[in-house]
Image 1 (cartoon, rainbow, N blue to C red):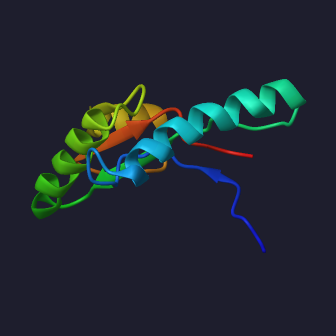
Image 2: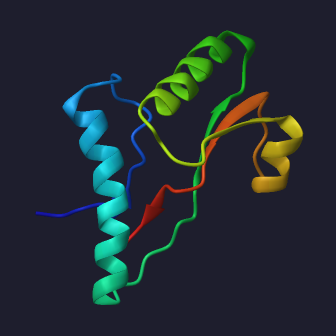
Amino acid sequence: RNNSGVVHAGMYYKPGSMKARFCVEGMRKMYEYCDAKKIPYRKNGKLIMAVEEHELPGLEAIYERGNENGVPGLEMVDADGIQQLEPNARGLKAVWSPETGIV
């Protein structure tokens, strides 16, 4: 089977669920395995953006869930922060997940 190669951080899953726990733990273990086996990967991060006011409550929920799940390094960034991370993106606010990557 094909695999997208995305290393997900775990901010979407219900806190306390097996999916949340395995995603956060699996991300850490995947990077450790890649380091040990010298498999290249890139932590290019991910912006989850709200571009309209009505999307802000959902974005806040994703941020809170990610923190409850122990996703490392999550940040809520404003429009200026979005521009600093990705100059071609425009939004009101975003969750920045620096540990999201690709193998």
